[in-house]
Amino acid sequence: MPDFLPALGALTLGGSVVVLVLSLVSRSTRSRYGARWRCWAWLLLCLRLAIPLPLLPQGAQEAKAPIQLTVPSDPIIFQGRPARPNPGVSSSSSGDLSVPAGSNQTEQSPSTSVSSPGQDQTTSSDTSAQPPAASGFSLSLSQVVTAVWLAGAAATLIWAFVSHLRFLLYLRRWASPVTNPATVQLFNELGNQLHLDRRPRLMTCQGLRVPMLAGLIRPVLLLPEYVPSDSALRYSMLHELTHFRRKDIGLKTLALLANALHWFNPLMWYMTRLVERDTELACDEAALRTLPAQEHRAYGQTILDAVAQLKGTCSTPS
View 1 (cartoon, rainbow, N blue to C red):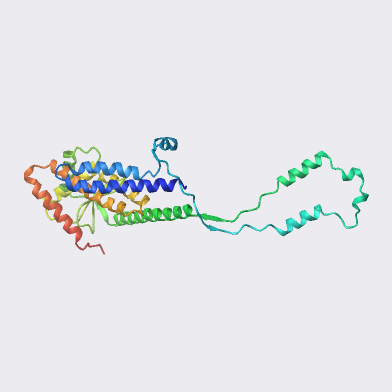
View 2 (tube, helix red, strand yellow):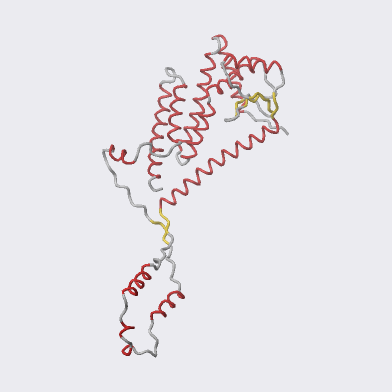
């Protein structure tokens, strides 16, 4: 485990550099390169961060390193007292070796005073079979740091799991399949337009303000009960189905896992925001490529209206 901590630190340090570079490059090359290329870069980075282990054998890494650094020793920050020996065992063993008070050592016969080779071997084997003295409990710095890291990673994952579980319970109570024939027909037309062989379930849910795609294993396209217009419904469904086609939920889940493993690094939290932003931009770019130029403005206005509704006060069913 002490070897794991330096590897994790080096990995999160290298990941921080990549996050800063991608953040700066995205601002200077936004008009030249699309967001989908940055999504590929985020995918590779999140995959590497989610595997906090060296990819090359330890011997190969040491042979290729031009400079070898001496790893400092792991200091002991707590040392408990060693366990005391049992008084009963020591007294009994000493009593066996003592000579009775009434016996005369000079009057012993030669046969009893001279020990045989078998007796010497038995005595030496009994001495070597005695257990060593028990050492006290010790706690090193690497053990404390590892425990803190595990606690933070577990807390981050548990928080995400509980939030997802609450959302699933909310859907089970308030979501229902879409029965409007016009909406189902529009959903099928958009699926054919995007060449989707596998499609998410189509459901409506109370309390939603905008359509959304949810679920990694069993994805579902959720629609609000009220949509301002047919064109807004069409563009919103096109946006969410493009997310489904690009598998953006998988990238966001991978970024969440990488963030949980590197929770102590603030740049990893910033990376999740950048992944969220670039997946939305890449989705809009892909959706606009399927629309004629005269509909780009209407699509953009629909997305802006959806963002404005998300920033407003969300209504919840009573």
